[in-house]
Amino acid sequence: MTTPLADYAQFADKRIAIVEHMQNHPFVLGLRQAREHGLEVWLLTGDRTWYTHGHDWETHPIAQVIDRVIDVDTTDLDAILASVTGEDGRPLVDGVTSFSDYHTVIAAQAAQRLGLPGPDPEAVEIANVKDRLRVALGDVPFNIPHVLVSDKDQLEAAAHKLGFPMIAKPPAEAISYGVRRVDDMAQLTEAWNELSGIRKSLRGQRRSGDVLLETYVEGVEVSVETMTVDGYTHVFGVTSKDLFGDPAYIECGHTFPVPLSDESREELYSVVRKTLEAIGYRHGPCHTEARHTESGWRIIEANPRTPSSCMTMLVTDVTGRSPILDAWLLTIGATPAIEPVTHSGGAAVRMIYPAKRGTLKRVDGVEAAEAVPGVQVLLHVEKGDALLQRMDNSSCVGFTYCNGPDRLEAQALADKAASYLDFVVEEEQA
Image (cartoon, rainbow, N blue to C red; front, top):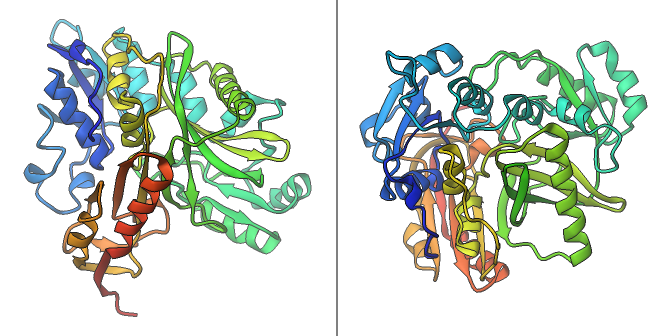
């Protein structure tokens, strides 16, 4: 990142515990920047191998930028509390938080139990459990009709109520896992058969096997990056959400900021703020996805965390504020100086997916990609890694990132760099 960060001196002599962490470059960079400003960071993790994928922990990028790692069951609230409190029962840290969708609720619960700053755990859970978000929004025009299906016999009634096409998804997952469009009963039944078998999350938490069905809404999708402080939601701006398209919804890139008319922008910001108010979310970052339809904006999801896929880098380079660092300021009870939000230039990221499934042998074209003006090549796979294990955002193997004079030029340069990369694999035997 080239944009100088605003003053984060309030981190000096403070300590936070992070309950699991996102592991790509922007989050490692955030840790490094926070420590440079004096913040001490503890990582609480239930499984170091989730980060290392068989590689050595001591050489992992996250291991290089944290002060202490605590091995603890991060699904057990009492265990988390015990790991961050002293013999006198007082907290050993100034804040507890998480950017992992699977741990934001328990981190909020821990902060609440310790009397530390944090969002209402109930609000976080409503956002994370997508059918609960739909119920909380009720009959507002920016909600989407839905049915939560718990039994295969309910499919016909759901199809009659919602009609086709519709979206089928697990009620509580991340990285677009399991999300797909269905156009008829045969596809709906196939989606049910697969999704109802998901009884554990990607991080091991129990799941009911319920399937959330939503009316498909046609339109351009964006995300809104926000920080809510004492109940008021500050908006950093709007990010494009470029998708590979039907039937799955896998992200392939983002640009920031997206230009909107004054009327459309005001409507979108209002919808996002009303959504967060409806669920009682008064403290912390949020990444809210919305689609612009013929009848106005519709809320797709609200994710009570900072965005992934280098979107925090986009925001930082264009606004000079880091959503990651601002979120951690809130975690220690400080108030980030977000307003006024100003934009300078534009930025873009392309998410890289290998063309073939198999074991990575080498990556060709890196030197040519890095030679593209203004581009950073950020890969997070190594020789020997298994590629394309699932068709969702977890298949992404890296990014080409560019900060430029405007978002379209940055996108063109990031695309150019991405075109040079070739992931050579040893293909799986049939």
